[in-house]
Length: 298
DNA sequence: CAGATTTGACCGCG
DNA sequence: CGCGGTCAAATCTG
Image 1 (cartoon, rainbow, N blue to C red):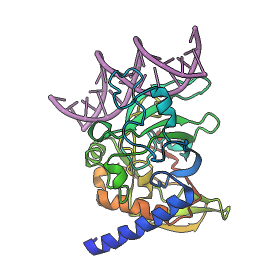
Image 2: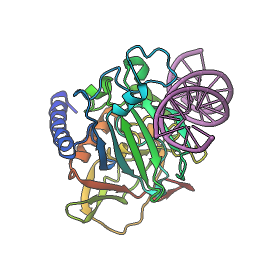
Image 3: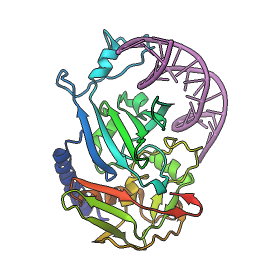
């Protein structure tokens, strides 16, 4: 794609995403996998959403020089909101739900009364940029295909300033390509349920374009390491041309290939991601039905 | 070997 | 004292 074309492309995309973000009051960038912005807890704080020093600091830390007073109270003041991410049970798609940011897992905890453990993530650039954004990911007990993602704090790292086109972290992209990433070729089964129309449409993608998807066995740990937490997971499912068509009952067919086989550049993948995402109504629910692949559920 | 994840231990709140 | 949240050493991965 030529530079000028790309720039127009990005500007247009930025515009659309801004509108969608405003419409949904999403505090952060939109992701095609986000199906619902459930709650937004914006405490009555000092006005600014967050600044270094107001975010959570370790209880145990003895060097909270910039956090005077009760750190726990401070933590409660950090903006918190929850999103629900729907992932088809059959997909077995593992790891932190894609939202365009790079996260680093720092803990996992079994929660009393919950069937599934809760994964704790913080911004991967916490050390380098002091970004205090964190999130918690927990699978819903009632609907196992739904993940409750609780965000705490906003990104103050460079990612926040480059949400779109949101070029993926090169390091993670490199890692992913070396990982056991697998591309599944789903010609059908990607459903977009729009709340407004109440109808279900099936996304048909170009048969020639493979879809990157993550495959990682991790002892049933749904919150395991699967990095990057960006377009390469769920968002990447949008990273190819689609055609909107009425839902059909076609059976899914899969033809796995390695991620290295991808001809589309990382950058283009991201662009497709946001573009396709923004093509839908802001209130659209997105579902994926991948079926099974080679004995492993996706 | 560097960086990421795992997991048991620890901490503070309620 | 139980629980949620975090730390950090051990382990894993590329």
